[in-house]
Length: 109
Length: 115
Image (cartoon, rainbow over all chains, first blue to last red; front, side, top):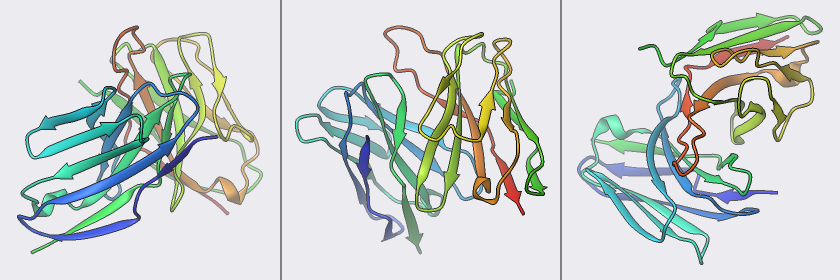
């Protein structure tokens, strides 16, 4: 089966940086996704990593180490609107997505 | 462009009743998926379809069935609902083209309560 772990909750101050870690053990690997999900809404795509290294997209960056089964999502210059759940998801050998339970980030003024 | 639509938005259902959740996409994506999301468990795949006319079972398929008669529609049916099927259901689609990242895009969800 698939095993994807991420912290349940994180709290940070507006303007700060938060790093959400994700570790995974899956049958095969064809890429790792990060999604953002605001309360009561659908998940929306943030980033995709398939090779080792850092992908930067504005205030958000995502890192992958395939040998360690590890990724992180870095949120910089936090804004109140960044308060949401962040979902780590891994594509397995059959190209199916397996999701972690999500990390709820609360941004405080 | 609507993307993916789901209906109904929410529903309260008596146990034992039959229910079909509807999902339609206008992006001409090949693949479609049904997930359920429960607190503390994350999104779990129920059924999927890689192309019109084909379907497959996901992680939690029991009690659910799907069909894919055309590219756009992917209904999910609960033949005889049980309280453990109380959840938020998300439909998703992806292009499923070779060599692409195959990002999945999600509908707004259906909140289902089975009493």
